[in-house]
Amino acid sequence: MNLAYTIIEVERKTGISSRTLRFWVDKGLFPYIEKDEKGVRYFSEKDLQWVLWIDCYRQIGMSIKDLKDYIALCAKGKNTAKERLEIILSLKEKTLKDIQKFQAILKKLDFKVKYYEKMTKEGEDKLNPLSKNYKKRKKRLKL
Image (tube, rainbow, N blue to C red):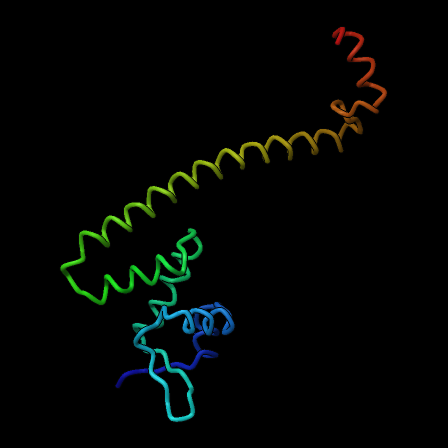
């Protein structure tokens, strides 16, 4: 027996809003979705998995157009495997670069956390030009 899920059920299972799911369906990202006579859309188990992949691809910045192109390649079968592999490898490379960028940002944020923790502990803002101690330090350093 094939299970079929409504958009609301898919939302509950995936955490992705029904509004987003409807948008994706309307954009053609689910070419095999079935509708009943009342127009209610039903997602299969495979569609449910595809929802999670679309969410993944969107989170790493894949455009709707690129997703549609990827879907078109998938529909053509195994003859497009090389092209699809290149797309995924490109996404992986971009994601690794994004991770490096966010790691650098995280280091900067860690610095700020330590700075503000020290400031709240000591009660002094050593980098603030309006701070009394900043002016004293400036004189000592002859800035």
